[in-house]
Amino acid sequence: MVIDPFAKEVGFAPPRFRADAVLVTHAHFDHANSASLTGDPFVITGPGEYEVKGVYVEGIETFHDNSQGKERGFNTIYRIEMEGLRLAHLGDFGESAMRDETVEALGDIDILMIPVGGRFTIDAEEAAKVVKQIEPRYVIPMHYKIPGLKIAIDSAEDFLKEMGAAKIEAQEKFVIKKKDIGEEEKTEVILLKPA
Image (tube, rainbow, N blue to C red; front, side):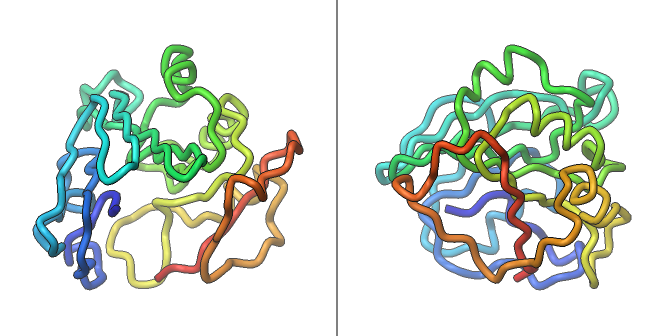
């Protein structure tokens, strides 16, 4: 499953591998390059309930900006259930606070992937507030400035500070199974190295 495959215009070679499913949060070039993938994937481009090869996906409509979509349109959050885990990918979520009905629709989330780079999405401070609203066990920041990126957004540094995780080391990968998730109430930040 691939979420928001990007085009070369972002500054990197687009993903080129086989996928069973592609989730597109919104139709901007940096999120909707499903043509770069092989395997005739099932492409999901908006709200609704789907099942692909035993993976349950629910798309929840939100806004890409804090003006009810007037600036950048709609964004789809994807809630994904697989192997007993509940993940949420917020795409280019742009609302300064998550609406109560969206929090309720998401339900309990084990792993939250959240944009933190600001400018076109929520910024570090807003992202930290959304994390507190959702209360996931793990949070993975995304959509932030890395070397080579041709989009003007902020780094993950401010988000890490907001979350009290300024000193964490980036990991090559993050592997977790449902049985490994403890009952601890605190959200742990996982910073991944760019691929």
